[in-house]
Length: 264
Image 1 (cartoon, rainbow, N blue to C red):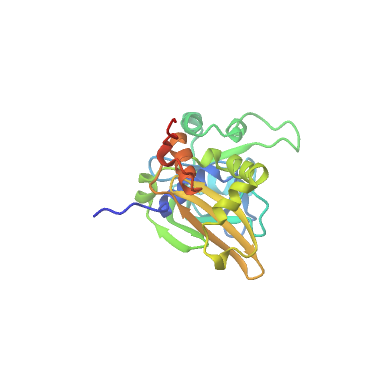
Image 2 (image 1 turned 90 degrees about the vertical axis):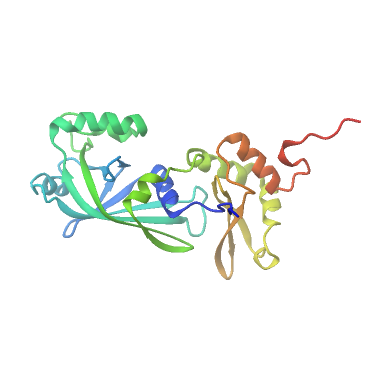
C-alpha cells in the first residue's frame, strides 16, 4: 500500500532554499568570501552566480581558463520571525567557478530573469562604474561537484540529478508573509496548533517556523533549548485552496474538507 509523503525531500528543501535565500556566500581559498545575490540553478545542473565586478575573485576566474577555480558556496535559509536561533537550514555546494564569455552573458541573463527576476541581474556588466559606491556584478557559472543540506534533522548529500528533478515548494514565495501575519495577528491559531504537540513539548514559547505543501513547522523555545516539530497535513497540497482546507483540518475545524453546516 502506498504511503503519503509527510515532509519535503532534501532536494525539494534545497530548491526552496535556493528560491528563498536572499543571498549566498562564495568562497575561494586565499580570498575573502564574496556575496552572491544571484544563485540560480540552470538546466545543466550548474548555477549562475554573481560576484562584485572588479573583485579579485572575478579576475581570477576570468584568467583561470577551462579548468575554472575550485569554490564553495553556502546558502542560508533564515526564519522570517526573530527567533532565538534564526537559521532554519544551510546548503553547501562545492564545485568550480567558470568565466562566461561576454557574448553569452546577455542570453544567460535573459534566461535567468525569465525564471527569477532578481533585481541584482540589472547590475550585471551594465556599464562603467560611476563612483566607488557604484556596485556592479560579474556573472559566473558554478559547475557542481557536491551538494549537502543541513537542518535540525541532520545533514544529507544529494546528486545533481535529484536536484534538477525537484521543484521549489509552491508556497515558498508567500511563506514569510504568512508566518509573520500568523504570529502578529493570529496568536490564537498558533496556540491551537501548539495544542497538537505532546504535553512534554508545550513548555516554553511556541512560534511558527515554516510552511510548505506537506505541513506546518513550529519552533518550541524553552530553557532546555530549541525544538522543531512538524505538524503534517493529511496529504500534500498544491494550491491556496488546498492549503486553506489543510490548515482548517489541522486546526480541528468541525467542517472538514470544506463541508458546510446543515441548514435547519
